[in-house]
Image (cartoon, rainbow, N blue to C red; front, top):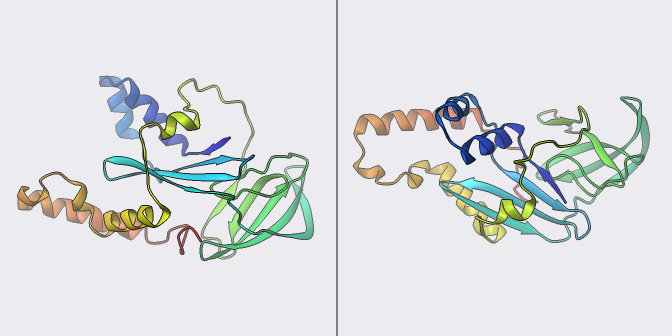
Length: 212
């Protein structure tokens, strides 16, 4: 099993498990670029996406997950590792991945799984997104949850309902705020400005066509 997760989310989750004055101060310094996690079972090829939508955790599952890679004859050295090029049209973008057969794991960053070797680097052809392996090291974080623990308090939704809920919260974030209608108008205006600025910086999602 594998888990794709932001290192800052690992830090924030660790701090919130045992909250105190110092941890709360540290928590304020952490900036999350994304909150979702991708869980993958390489044996069954089952992929799960889990995210906090509003105030709760939800997840959806994909059986026999497959990006229909096309493996090419092109190869090169990347950090002294021989890698082979593969391409895929997924999520509304064209992707180029470089994987190492010498590292026999069908793993990679985000949802870029299923190649006959570890994905060392992957990017879309317009260079909006790029993932590159920096290092491989043994995890020493004792607070790192296994996949079953991650899912324990999350609710499963169908892919369609999961996508629909994320879209509704994105379009109308006020729906997750208790008693939003009775808030002071100044607070509402501040909230609206925060959301407008957030949308300006999050207008280029990695999946132009979700889950395709």
